[in-house]
Amino acid sequence: MKTYRTQYILFAWMALFAAPQAFSAEHVVEQKQKKFTVPQLDVKVGDSVQFKNSDEINHNVFSLSDSKTFDLGSYPKGQTRSVVFDKPGEVEVECAIHPDMKMKVKVK
Ligand SMILES: [Cu+2]
Image 1: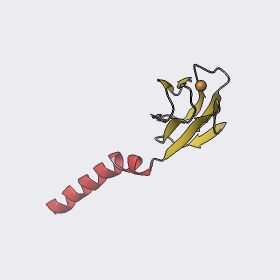
Image 2 (image 1 turned 60 degrees about the vertical axis):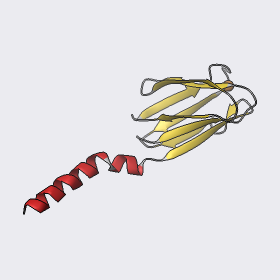
Image 3 (image 1 turned 180 degrees about the vertical axis):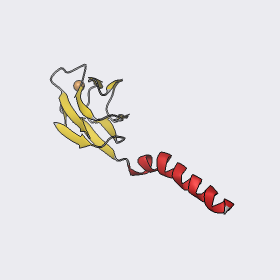
Image 4 (image 1 turned 120 degrees about the horizontal axis):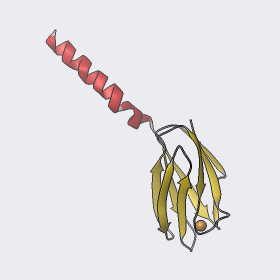
C-alpha cells in the first residue's frame, strides 16, 4: 500500500514539473539581409525561439511587449540567442540597430 502511494506522489510530481518541459518546442528564426526570415511565428506557452544572426553585420533582438519584455543585446554572424515565451500574448520583436527589422511572436 505504501509503495503505491509513493509511486502516485512521484507520478504527480513528474506530471506537474517534468511534462511542460518535455513538450515544449524550440523554434529558429534567422536574421538575414536585415530581415527576420518570418514576419510572424505562432508558438505555445513554454516554447523557446532561437534567434540566429546569419548576416555579416551585428543585429540585436529585443521586445518591449507587455507579455514578454527582453533584450538579447547585439551579436555577430553565426551567433544564436534564445528566449522562452512563458506567457500568452502577442510579442513584437525588433532589432535596435535596424528600426525596420520587426516580427511578431504569437504565444498561445
Ligand atoms: Cu538588425
